[in-house]
Image (cartoon, rainbow, N blue to C red; front, side):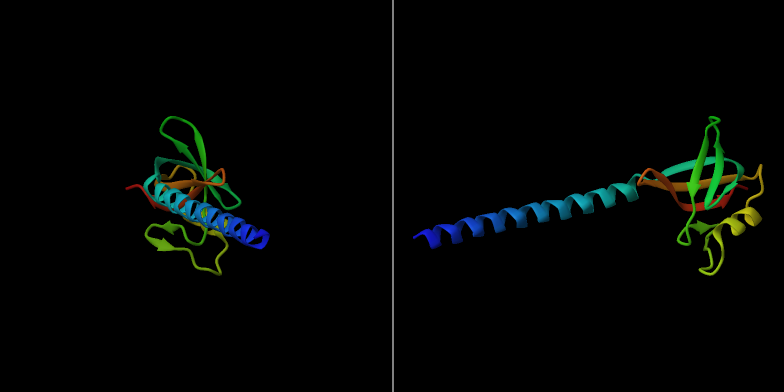
Length: 119
C-alpha cells in the first residue's frame, strides 16, 4: 500500500510539473508575441556610433543607443555576415543623418529591428 501511495504522489508531482512547464511555455509565447507587437519606433538624428550601437538623438532630445546585429535590416537589407557592424555603421550613418528605426527592448537593450535613412 505504501508503494501505491508513493507512486500516486510521484504521478501528482509529475502532473504538476507538466502543468507548470505548459504554463511557462504559454507565458514565453505570450511574451514573444508582445515583443513583436510592442516594437517601438524612433525618429531622430544620428549622434554617433559606439561599438555595435547606433546613437540616435530623439525628437525629444534624449540620446538612445540602438544595438545593431547582423539580423538588423538597414535600408531594407541585412548586414553581410563577414562585415564588422561598427565599421558598417560608421560608413553608412554620418552624424546628423536623419533616421527612422524600429526596435524592441530585450534584456535591458534596445535591439534594432530596422533602421532606415529618413528622406
